[in-house]
Length: 521
Ligand SMILES: CCCCCCCCCCCCCCCCCCCCCCCC(=O)SCCNC(=O)CCNC(=O)[C@H](O)C(C)(C)COP(=O)(O)OP(=O)(O)OC[C@H]1O[C@@H](n2cnc3c(N)ncnc32)[C@H](O)[C@@H]1OP(=O)(O)O
Ligand SMILES: NC(=O)C1=CN([C@@H]2O[C@H](COP(=O)(O)OP(=O)(O)OC[C@H]3O[C@@H](n4cnc5c(N)ncnc54)[C@H](OP(=O)(O)O)[C@@H]3O)[C@@H](O)[C@H]2O)C=CC1
Image 1 (cartoon, protein in one colour):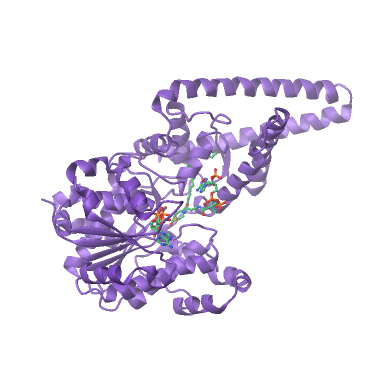
Image 2 (image 1 turned 90 degrees about the vertical axis):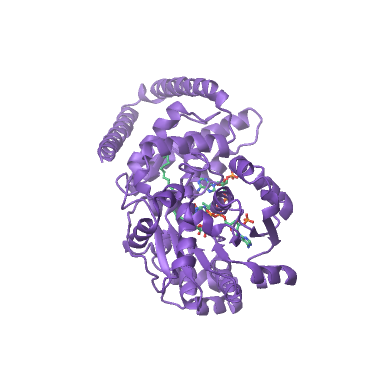
């Protein structure tokens, strides 16, 4: 029997962010491996016209929970959804619910956060810092609490190149930031945001760093640990490979590339793609919960949940494998054929954005107008390019995260626990993982039927023919109208053609050699 699974038996567990990507996988694993746990309290807010109960019902009836229902048929009775809004004082939890939580909770997993990169500082501070502070205050009143596990991010200190499993201080105290949010108006906050976040790229990474400082300062006598996952991706093994249900991290870009919207990206092929499967993060989280409660380390331990130093993969190899997977698993109704130009240069990025993204969108919108429909592609493309520009920071740099604590914990586990709560990322086969990821995006995010694959392949063939036809027609028209009439136009045309093909050849050669190197590595 697994020691960790046995530890959670009979326990009352509080999870924040249980309706999120990681929270759902955490609940699933807890119920599947410790079906005799007492109760999982989840702090939920009504959303998108759904009540708390409807939200819980939807989660429990999803494919993710199919196995759980076999092992733990009374799972509905073991989830207690508590109305809460982490943006409110005392989380707007009723007195009775608060009393129950304080009296009964044994372990807290704090996953809730805003993960948006463009959130205004006030909102990001409220959720990622103030709510963490409030939750710790609540936890300090829990007589039965054995462990408090805080989920942070490996990028909370992305302004550093080498990151140790320690809490780094921020120049301005979190308490001062929290106080100032109360009296400063939005315009002033917007003005000082760049100065506060300094060399971090966004309010998300900054407020997650502040959240860690709050954990350190307010820990009191609590048994606390911090987990820092890198870029969390689809499940690797459990409960089945490829499960994913939101667009964060690479998932949105996989869709954009597979549907043929995104065909070039400013990314450094040799930079480490520090992806970590969500089930690996959850396994480490549960192991840390057990270790923190049972071994009670004297100080707050930080655990890096990253792949780069143990089993590195780079963006070149990842992009190559994603594209290769589209051959086998094409997405339906693609706008253009999937294709990738990786570039590291600003000028070529602008060039490919104009040629591969904006121009086709304008042409398609023109076609929509001609056929009496509302143009939409330019707007969609602008949004996509904005999203990509926000992710660029993370795909053009490499970081080194030390993993001493994570490796120490692995060595502390029994062989059975190492198997049931596997977080040894060295066993991950990237090529297999990425193919399952693409498959998961198709099945669980796009909700496309596998039976549609032959038709999707036909559609891509049609797109290829249209592409050839379009290029030939364009060439003939240009030739007829301009080139045949003027020497000047001929010279300009030849220069453009030369430049275009030169760039294409150059980028291909660059990408090929990088893909090749990446592959060899
Ligand atoms: C040639 C290219 C392709 C080649 C091959 C295939 C490529 C795949 C592999 C290699 C590519 C590289 C992948 C890089 C991924 C790197 C991610 C790095 C992130 C690390 C950060 C640290 C990790 C963490 O700790 S936090 C978790 C990460 N958080 C996020 O990812 C949140 C990011 N999202 C946001 O902040 C916002 O959504 C934002 C600002 C991007 C957009 O906000 P906006 O208000 O404009 O819109 P939304 O309402 O949110 O959505 C609008 C629209 O866009 C869709 N969308 C949302 N997010 C993404 C996304 N990440 N990618 C693509 N599309 C996205 C959303 O669904 C909406 O669509 P509609 O149709 O309009 O509804
Ligand atoms: N995804 C990733 O790549 C990474 C994530 N992390 C960290 O992991 C944790 C979980 O992330 P992930 O699951 O991906 O994020 P999601 O965005 O999927 O989930 C966020 C969760 O927080 C909840 N939440 C947000 N605001 C409130 C609020 N005001 N009141 C109550 N609940 C709220 C959401 O509830 P609702 O459903 O109602 O919106 C949701 O359950 C976060 O702490 C994040 O920083 C770290 C590294 C990478």
